[in-house]
Picture 1 (cartoon, rainbow, N blue to C red):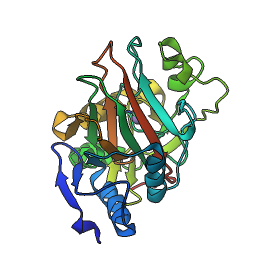
Picture 2: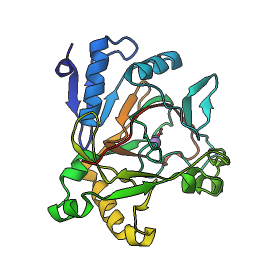
Picture 3: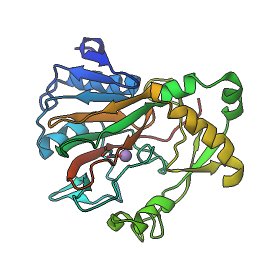
Picture 4: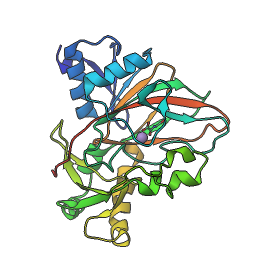
Length: 280
Ligand code: OGA
Ligand code: MN
């Protein structure tokens, strides 16, 4: 089977829905097709799946080597599965701001495979923004302004001992003693799997442009962020039992809505290893 034989329906704003596949029982050709579709569309959504944790791990391993997140608690008995959890009495959720996973790493995660395990009665949607389209729709002047720029990314202000989560009711995400070095990536990368140009800065982990202070960087960063989060290029994923989302962390941003206080939500995430990123 080749990629074009997969049944892909483009979704409003960002990504595609894949129909008529069983993620627990894929042929090698389907796996290759899904990987390429992921690179091309940035987000793939599957409905009506029933993956066990073992099948979730097997699926991830067929797509790419697993990159274990060093901050999130693991699902009991599954060290490679990160628990993305909010209890009925917590106020803070995980991923409740625009971000892309692991941009603070020298070799940022290629993708993430998120499985819905326990959903609130309503709310808890995830938004996805298309960073290919964000780049393509920038005006020529801004494209010229960011060509050749590089940006510094970090995680200490989020996951560090004095980071954002340390002040919340999810303090176990704030890991003292975990190495959180800053890292530098081009602002416009050449996507390693599609060859297309992508805008690669994000509001959660990008700190500043290389060679500039944060104050000097903020006006242009804010302009890029405002453009990138335009709702015409955002898809709202409404989770159902059995929904699986696979996204490409180089080609999209995501945002977990926190509108279900008093209810429990549990997702299982496996992060897929990526590579160093080159300028477009
Ligand atoms: C993540 C994340 C979004 C969500 O798992 O990386 O940001 O909706 N989760 O739970
Ligand atoms: Mn995330």
